[in-house]
Image (cartoon, rainbow, N blue to C red):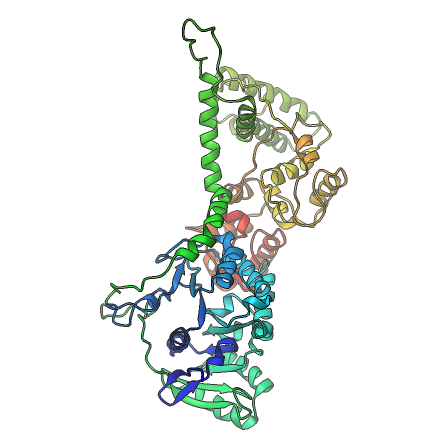
Length: 601
């Protein structure tokens, strides 16, 4: 006979809870985390596999006993500040393989991820977990505990979260057939996706006050309960003491089901998620040992791949390659030892030099962009009138001469005093050494048929070999996604075969050859500054962007954003610029506003 789970002094649940869909719902500090921790402890003690998804970093104390002096549960912690091993954004598939093939209990601490990184990791993890558990050999019982479940299965998913929501729904609705139970833990039942929430089999409801959350619970009752049970539950929820919970499971584990109020027993592990109070807490000094061999076997290759794909690591490698190239170019042939015949030994092979020169090519051309920017500024100052381009070429020639020789910039006599003052505020430019000739294998010198917009789009997808979504491409290129100024050049490079069809957009070998050597366009904060300086935004639109970016990128409600920028949240002076920023995909849609991920980096 299987061991029961001791949840409260007068309540036990069968071990088969491991593969059920459970919801633990309550207001903040009503005891839901204790209830979830108690269920986890009992499942682990009964020998069941448990995987905890922790978006806030509250669960790490499970490795220590409640007093902090004795070991707790030997659960491997991935990610967060107390990790046994780091958790990479792109490691969702490999962690799913570790979960299924090694059958280890894990704590996945996502607290150091940004919101879009949580979606990236959890989408891959949930999809591959569900797929791998379809194999008969892996259909062993496991419980997936998802804290802050509204972040993983939101009622209103943001762009990029749809697949994560779909994977979560698959696991809650059909995971039991593959041995996967799922416990959703949330203080806001109203913001958990209703298609997911109504599928739970076992409801554990603690004190709930907010009308919206009570209404969400009522939706579950309409599907599963009777009117008498509904009245009993709903009348008591707002006044339940801390730790008291209703356990409700219609038709499971027997036909009679469960409908019982009980006080959850104390937890046996350290409460690392408690709110700091006046009393000083004792930090745990003794953590349970864990076996990391399975972790090392599965994670080694993934960690190496994640490191190789990390932009910071790639930039470090490019810097190292540049240093090696410089050293190779300066190296002299090794002297021959007498009496042997002199033989020149190159420091590196030709193929290596070619590869190094390709890396250097991506960093060149900044001076040319400065010159081109000055010409465009001059054109705007004269209102694009007839003859303006000719005058601009005179300035361009002078700027190039000054850049080469370090001389003061000549000021054409036909410029008005105000134009002269604005365009030539800097009297001279520093001397720049001549640009070295570059050999760019595979890319060639460009076919000369690309216009400015087409070249800009190709440059962006060339510096992102993994591809850019259409939305990301428009934001980074400085266009509206639906405008002809973006759609027309995108259609042209697609028709020429320079990018692959579909979304995301990826460059082809023909596109690389046509583009030739290129200079990378800005991303992250540099892209944000470009939009603020050159993106043809109105004053209110720039003000909204700066409010979201300072002192660091953050999320604000529409009302808080309006207050910060000094506008009425319902007025057209605020709604219109906010709407245009959303149309340009520079900020997110919905009640919570934040910068798009391309502007954060």
